[in-house]
Structure formats: structure tokens, C-alpha cells
Length: 202
Image (cartoon, rainbow, N blue to C red):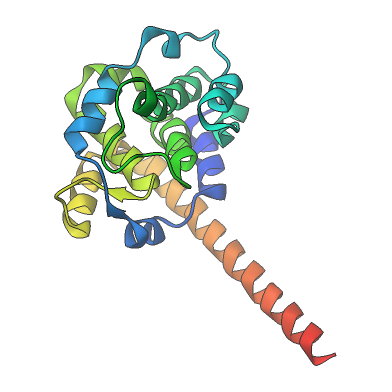
């Protein structure tokens, strides 16, 4: 089992900056509807024998990034619960607006790699506050604000429930990873611009 620190490092290596995610979020489904659906995950989704690669392929057509770390039971369960939210739109009824979209698997990975290492996914099913945290996290990384909440309210409520922020050691490590990834992104952009400028002047 990977330690939480390592899984958070993996998440920060491909997740866009949090601020960027908030600024692009648009009105989404009601939080209560997502939380209720999350609490009704069918038992087969939680079966440790079910392959996340196969499950993700069946639901989304491709494997989620967290599938590579699904040998960790927390990651496997977190991804499975996120995939249930996507599958439930066909099996139960669609959310309004639907969760399926370009960032749907990123939301699955957020549950699996950002939340699950800090809070056992089974707690999302049993504890109202942890379930709300998972639902808010999923919506955010899927590109949505909970229906009826403006950006500032949604952000404040999410941060108040964010278990990662409550663990100071993990929060510091995660902030450091995010900072390094942001520097790497900026350097890559600068190199690309420099190369383009050189190419266009030749």
C-alpha cells in the first residue's frame, strides 16, 4: 500500500492548479443529489476483485489514471465510488446537468488519489460530513459548483470539509508538490515559447 504522501504527489503531478479549477467551474447538479447517489453505491462496485481498469473502460471507455494505483485498496474503492457516480447516470437517472464530460475521469481520480488516501472511502458511505466532502470534491474536479452555490460559497464550504487541509503535515506536503508542479508547468511553457520564437525567426 502506497503512503498517502506518495498518492498525493501522483495526484498533484497531473491535476491542474486548484485555483484554475475553481475559476473554470460552472453551475452543476445539486450537492444533495450527488451525495445521495454516492451513498447508494452498489456492493459489486466495492468488490476488491473487480478491476478498476475494466470498470473504468466499461463506464468511460478508457481507464482512469488512478487505475495504475488500484492495488492500494483506498485508491481502488475511491475510484470505484467515483465510477459509480458516472455509471449511475445511465443506471439510475442523469444528474442535471450530467456529470459526464471532459473532466469526469479527473473527478474520479480526485476521489481516488486526493481524498481516499486521507479518508477511508467507506467513511464516505457512513458519515454525512465525509460524504459531503467526497461529493464536493467530485463536483469540483468534474468542473462544477453545487447547484445554488456561488464560487466563493462553494469554495469555503469545500475547504471547511477538506480532510487534507485538516492534516497539516499532508497539507504542507501537498502544497509543496503543487508548487513544484506549477513551476515545472511554467518552465515548460517558457521553453515552448522560446522554441517557437527561435523557429519562427529562422
